[in-house]
Image (cartoon, rainbow, N blue to C red; front, side):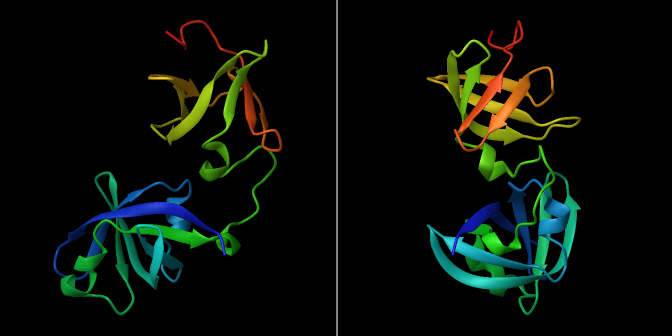
Length: 169
């Protein structure tokens, strides 16, 4: 079965079993909704299946409590674990929408055919996402807007862009 990363447990929070999660999901409210099943991985190995009891936001973190694990001693060992969902838990998206894991790793090419680099990360600072493109040691930040992103071709593994003036500086 395939699993997709939706967050990382970075610490505990309080004494009632809450864990502090740094989300890497594009749908945090949906992923961490009470009753949802998540899978805990340590160094790539599935360690435990858990069910979300409570989800709330605190600063830049998502705080989660799992059913049956409402004590700090029960969750302390999860620090550093990855939170994942199964492939079956992914909903179909509308045309033109993509999951983060589908975009990360795609090759970026200009309208003229020049290779720019590879998408290494996705940032969600506000109005629109920003794709981080690695170009050797350099990074280019691409706003995900129609003026820049012209075509996403998952089959070819590439994104075609209009590299507007100032984006690659």
